[in-house]
Image (cartoon, rainbow, N blue to C red; front, side, top):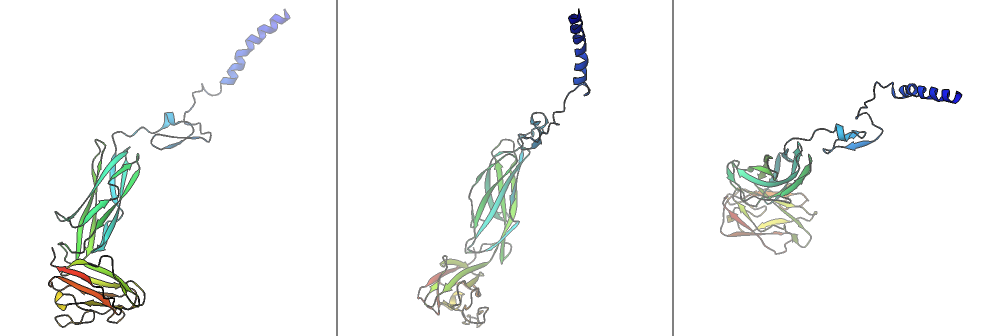
Amino acid sequence: MRSLLLAVLSVVAVPACTSDITGGGGGGGGNPGSDTGGDTCTCPDGTVMDGNVCATACPAPESGAGTIAIATDLPTYNTQLNQTVAVNVTVTGSQGFSGLVALTAAIKDGDTAITEWTSAFDNAMVSVPMNGTATAKLTITIPAIAIPSTDATKMSEALTITGTPQTTGVTTQTAAAMVVAANMLELDMSATTSTCNFPAKADVKVAVGTTINWKNTGTTNPFTIHVDSNTSGITHQGDPAPDGTVTPSSPSGSTSLTEPGDIWPETVSAIGTGSVTWHCHLPNDGTNQTLTIVMPQ
C-alpha cells in the first residue's frame, strides 16, 4: 500500500512542476529578429543583418528592372591642339539594376557633329553589378588644325555620353560635359650641345590664326627656331615680321630659348606656298621639319 501511495503522489506532482518551467513568458512566441548571438547574415541586396534573421527580416526586393546614371569625372576638359583628352565615365546602377550598358560618345558644335575630334572608349560595354558601379575611359584626340566654333580663340564643344542598358525596360541615360581646346599648338623641343631633339608630331598642318608655342623642355642648352621664309606667316625667331614688327623673344630676354620652360609664341598670320621648313640652330643639326599652313576649315 505504501508503494502504491507514493506512485500516486508522483503522478499528481508532475503538472505543477511543468507549469513552473514553461510559464513566466506569457505563452512563448519568440521574436525572429531578437537572436543576435554575435552572428550576422547577408540579404540578397547586400544588407547585413544581426543574427540569423535574413529569412524573415530582409528588405523586400526592388520592384522593376532598376535604373542607371551616367557621370563624367569633370564638367569641363581644357586642352589645346594636337593633344588627347582622357574622360573617365562612371555608370551607376540603382533600384536593383544589374547588367550590361553600352556606351557611345558624341561631340558637337551646336547641332553640328565635330567629326575631326575622334573619340574611343577603352571599354564600350560595361557590366554593372547590382546597385553598383562600372567605369570606362574615353580618349578624345584633338587634331592640329583648328575647327570652326562660336569662339575664335577657344573651341568650346559639347560632349554627350550615352549609356544604353541592354536590359529591357531600363531607360537610356546621358551625361554632358564640355571640351575646350585653345587655338594653340605646342611644339616641345630640347637640345644638346650638338643637336636638337624635335617633337614626335613635328610635321603638322597649322591654320592661320593658330598660335604656335615653341617650348624648351630640355636643359640649359639654348637654341633658336629657324624658319626659312617670312612670306609664310611664320618668322625666324628674333627677326622682324613682314610688317616690320619684331617677333617675341623668350621669357628669359634672349632671342633664343635659353632656359627650360622658355616659350616663344608666334601666331600664324598668313598662308604661304606649300610647306614651311624649319629647324633649330645654335646648335644646328641640319634636319628640317615642316609645317603646312592652311586656312581654317
